[in-house]
Image 1: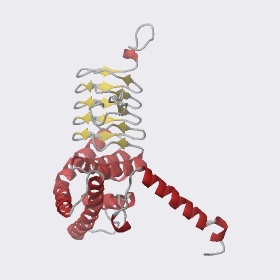
Image 2 (image 1 turned 45 degrees about the horizontal axis):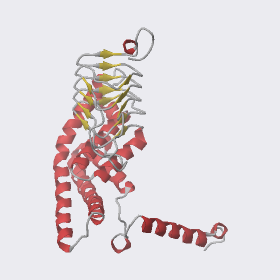
Image 3 (image 1 turned 90 degrees about the vertical axis):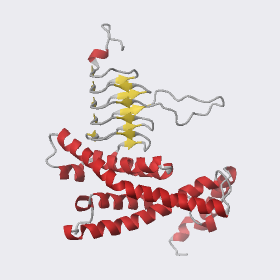
Image 4 (image 1 turned 180 degrees about the horizontal axis):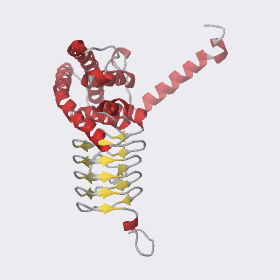
Length: 312
């Protein structure tokens, strides 16, 4: 040990940290990973996978700086091969972890789990062309929806809303395929980079545009139609969190808004609960909304007020 490191009493600290880890694992019924290896997926590995997938989806914009069109297909093929194999390894960790904490794994179960893992990633790979086409509608929606946008390339390279939506489209597929942890990691990587928090369970239609984006929150069971545009600091959240008879929060039941086609939601609006925003409606800035509104509604703070100034 170097003279400098001896200042920190590292032997003692390492020993105490080992004790804390062992105590936590014992209290929570945790077991060690296979042969002492990593038990859970890696956020760092998923960040690399997502960067590679973004490059493969948009090679001449999000790929390497020295890429040329004549080598585009080679780059995409090689990048996907590396990224999908890496994703397979992360998916294997998640599914084995879930199985280990749900039931004992025998040899046959492990074989079936491996086949399932490969099938999920094969389906994900086959979905990528369709996801690219879907993302093209999002890029065009941003370009046509923002008068400051000079080109679709600027939108793709610069807009945080587009990065968040790319991650969401990929994460949503993983979520629906039975990889909720990898999906959540993917969403949180985008959240950290953009300030836009989209749960991977949210269902979002074509031509979706988040303008500016910082502070946007979209909950797990939200359903968003086609050609929807929202601005910064918009929340599509839950109004309440029902508990079961033991006082534990109920998971998975619909609790977030449904936003129908062609809706615009301006900055700072908070929309809570399983309510419906009708097709073609406009929700003004800073509106607090907990009830459904019909199609074609134009809702602002002003028309939410009674004559005495109290909220409707």
